[in-house]
Length: 93
Image (cartoon, rainbow, N blue to C red; front, side, top):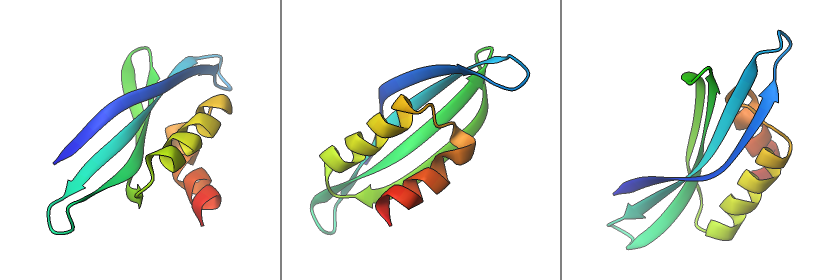
């Protein structure tokens, strides 16, 4: 079973002065075989309410606090969906 929970949001202006809204979600997955949970991150970038970009990284960690730390840092620095995968890889690996 997988659930998505919105944890943070941020807003920034792009090069063309468009206002972009960025939403950061925790992905919680329950693994039946191992009877455990894993956490991932989903980032959505919206322009005028329309989703323009999405990045999803599943099964990132078994530690909710670690996933929340990554989301916090990304939101504090307005990381968009386009750059999210690279930023997550740099922070985790």
